[in-house]
Length: 158
Image (tube, rainbow, N blue to C red):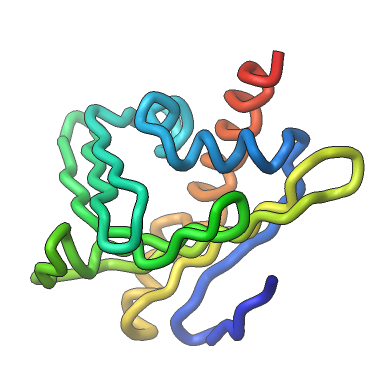
């Protein structure tokens, strides 16, 4: 599965994770797993709410350098073990956010050797928002999240 990316507004990377796709999906869709990988360490997730359906909530709170950040959002598309799309443009009940940041798209596919081809895409409203995210360290941050996810999911596979 591929998407038409706009280099002016989209950021993306693909990596092969050495864990099965069903575990990657489980980690992204169950509240008990999210705190173990969702933000780059040493930052931490302090709360998670998931209602895994189109229009359902995906709310997270995390602590970054002593500051708690609330991140309400909703799922826009849920294709089990293949595609997960969520955004902070809306909160549950399709309430528009005053200052949305991005829409995240996760694409999962089987990779040789039982692993997962993992693509993370961040779509932004405009080139300035994309540039802000890139300058914040999208590749390093989302790359760290993928590394943490892989390590955590390996522990679940045992």
